[in-house]
Amino acid sequence: MSGDVSRVESPVTARGYMLCGFAAFGGILFGYDSGYINGVLGMDFFKREFGHATDLDPSGYNIHTWEKSLVTSILSAGTFFGALAGGNLADWIGRRLSIIIACGIFSVGVALQVASTAVGLLVGGRVIAGFGVGLVSAIVIMYMSEIAPKAIRGAIVAGYQWAITLGLLLAACVNQGTHKWDSYSSYRVPIAIQFVWAFILAVGLFFLPESPRWYVKEGRGEEALAALARLRGQPIDSEYLKFELGEIQANYEYERSISEAGWIDCFKGMGPSGNLRRVLIGVFLQMFQQLTGVNFIFYYGTTFFQQSGVQNAFLISLITNLVNVVTTPVAFYGVEKFGRRKLLIWGAAWMLTCEFIVGAVGVALPGSKAASTVLVVFVCFYIFAFATTWGPAAWIVIGEIYPLPIRAKGVALATASNWLWNFVLGYVTPYLVDEGEANLKAKVFFIWGSTCTLCLLFAYFFVPETKGLSLEQVDKMLEETTARTSAKWVPHETYVQNNEKLDHGAHGNEA
Image (cartoon, one colour):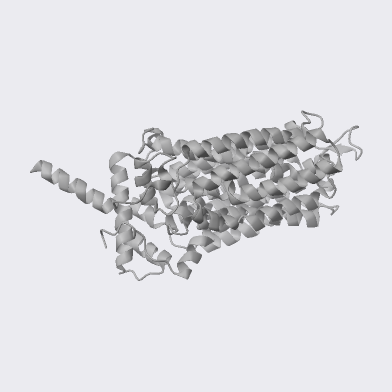
């Protein structure tokens, strides 16, 4: 079996698949917390209680643009630092316990938001909750990537993106049900429901095993074997398990021999096996995922639809979230059938087409029913494209491209990039479209179309294909190919064989 390059992972039972997939529930925290603020900012009671008297607003109250920007984007500031902290925490105490602790931090932030009656406490609560979400988002991705079998790793991690969409949809449903309430419950109920998601994730993680790859990193081989046996549903004396664990250990020893595991080591080497090359791919991939403009719809869609004259803006926002949820599972098949790289390239082409159409019609027929119809229809097409390509594929790739010694820190840096740009775009967007500011209206879609063009170019020139490979095989592929030739790479040697060859060569030289 040691010479079988194709078989470097054990067969997996249905129970094993369920264990691997549960961690994707962490996406609910991300999606719901990102989505509820979209509707809350449009609630009449919220605007009256948190806003300010103004002669320009017929209702007599208005929330300043800078306040909307701060409330919308400040969560991402917390998540940025949480994601960075996740790298050290996950390496220190393990992936599983780190996620449980993150749920506790998140719950403290939620409690402060529920108690808020002014912008200041709401912002403080969102910063703390954001720190918890940042920890969860970074660590869940590395945890799922490390425990999932290669045959369905893409689909498993895509489940995280689907959980995000479910969170967004649930937030839209709750907002739809409470936005007309004339009481503090109108916004407190949507916020408080987040306690449920944190509780489910934290309790569920108590029953999941730790990542076998983390145990290997810590030199705890027996515990790694036991965890692998639970995840694969195989007896602990299985030859498959011993071979898979041996490959993980051999890969770690090889990677440790050519690089260390400190933060500074993440920024060394632009060559084929260099860490910096991989870190930059992950950081820019997450940046471009945000630059698709999708969070403009999910953070600011309700108020933008209202400003654009679209009837039933809350209902339209609910529909866009429903499209997101229903279409994301298409990626479960797509990422394994067509690969990550193709989805990113064609998804960007689809999105930029939709966005330029919305922008062109909106400029040509401003305020018309036709423009409103095109806005809603092509925004739905655009969300379909994102949900089946860039939404899941960007998360999948960052969980696959880093060597084990720096995996936690690499994923943390990429996730922090996501949240940094989430913050920037969340803060800037109201200034782009508010009537008292740039007031771009449909022209804002020319910006998103242009950034999606950059997404396409980046994916074509820099993103490798990782479909169908174990994490250890991905390391070997990245050493031997470029992005444009990566899809043709075929496994030809295990790390166990490679290390044996190196050892033999060393002994031969000594002789």
